[in-house]
Image 1 (cartoon, rainbow, N blue to C red):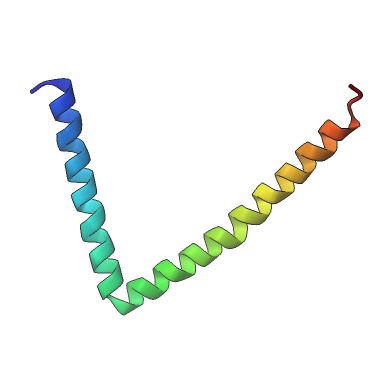
Image 2 (image 1 turned 90 degrees about the vertical axis):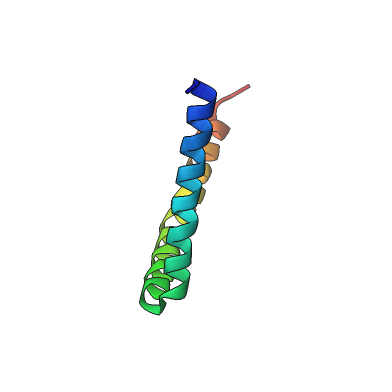
Length: 66
């Protein structure tokens, strides 16, 4: 098996596992609620942190003279 075909096979296996997991999560109401809660938590934490870092970086950069 060549490296390219091994990489392709691995990608197919990973994609199939992802689709299977998504199907199980979407068709099981408790898992669907858990996933939705996790997405809300992730978005609620990561987006404000990203924006705060961008504001801090802009603040630091604006202090430097050209």
